[in-house]
Image 1 (cartoon, rainbow, N blue to C red):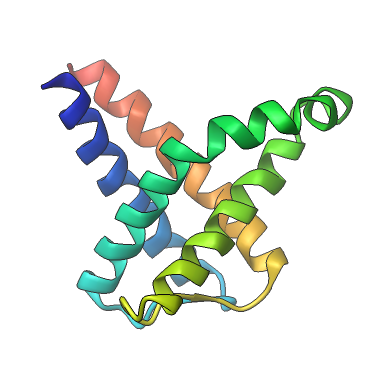
Image 2 (cartoon, rainbow, N blue to C red):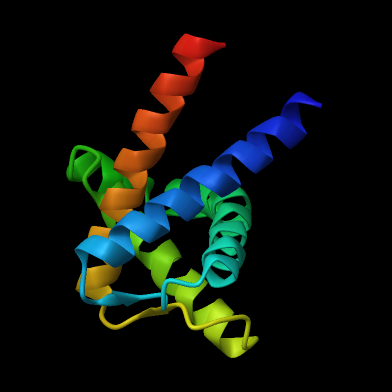
Length: 124
């Protein structure tokens, strides 16, 4: 039950992060449609849970040399991959126009996830 709660929590936090990134960045377009944001948030959550651990292990030397900053690039890549998957399967109008927008969106989503996680952990 706890794993399901964590998955749903990450899904909603990623959806909120995508919405905020779309509002702040002109390079992230989602059309303000809730269903598109929910699908993109779910895709990002699943991609993060499956691919991110492998990417972090593969990029560990770059992460160590950059003192952890390379994780921002990995997050940007995962946001770009989410955009590509949502568009490829015609699941909505979520689009990231450039890799720099994806990196900034990944940074925003990471900050939103951190803030939401701290808020929830203090409440429960």
